[in-house]
Image 1: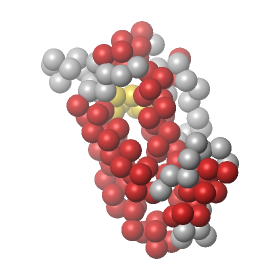
Image 2: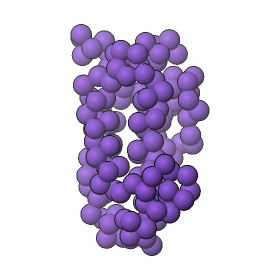
Image 3: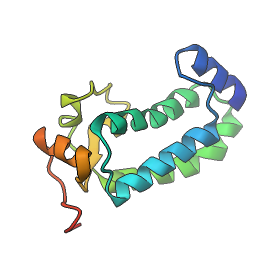
Length: 137
């Protein structure tokens, strides 16, 4: 099992653009979840790019020492629950119109924001997503 630095380096060697730390990716997930809760309005491709922070955590969890996993898991679980509360499960149908949705173990790709606003909202609505208008949410 790897240390945080070792996992970041290994994932970087596997194609991630940099050797991220767990703290950086947890923070990125927290920022994304907060944005989704408020109403994520950026472009759909930016949204897809932002979702990859959770992919990194998923991949890192398979490599990290148990004590690091135990340290960070409660915070990630809390963020995951907030994400689930702020999104709608459509099995990835709407998002898949714009970005290939990965397998079912990456569940965050199979959900879209409950509040559909801005560019992301327009794109997802065009793909059949149903969600709340930010003015009524």
